[in-house]
Length: 255
View 1 (cartoon, helix red, strand yellow):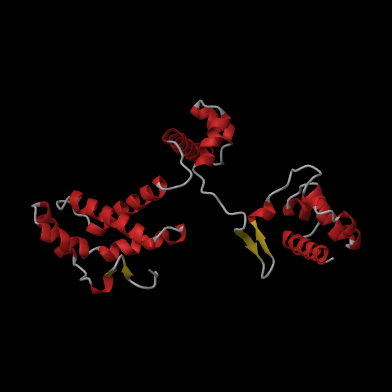
View 2: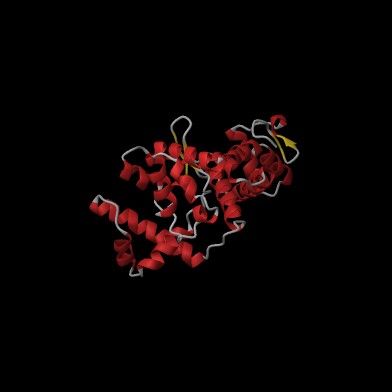
């Protein structure tokens, strides 16, 4: 399925009738009374709504057909639980139900499982952080959050880290028109003298570089500095460090 089309799970949603709000309420009343045909018509009449919600999760790498089916489960739950006596549009009630069902699916199928207690601690820490920020008009430290929760600082840090989505080292964080900086460029290397520069034995090649390129490679791969730290010490931009570093490595590999 492609998102610029409307066919999913073998269903062409273009062929489905769009229901008016009054029709939805009437069908809901019949469905709650046990009319299965009305329930089925109500489901089919809201599949486009499910598809629109699924599109919000298109960057998660999940099979869209799977997400669509999970979204339909959320739709069915909304149909079964919607209170027709309330002055609320059906879609207003249904969209959060569909989103919740999809999020539960993504969480339960995540390869990195986080315990319920750890998630609870993380959410409590986030609530405390918001409360302290509003109270003192500044973001609290981890120590302050831990003190408020009566917990160890390490436990709070681990809990907060557990709910952060993993990020690829190759995810771009900056681009000034050709010199892309990736997450891996922001990370220092604290390895010993047996790092990869020594391992491929190119120390003798460094003498062929100009002083600035030589210093950049030395700081980056011998001292374990990040590109940002290197840029600040040399007095140039991080983008320039990235460009000079790549050119120097290309020159060395060429030799």
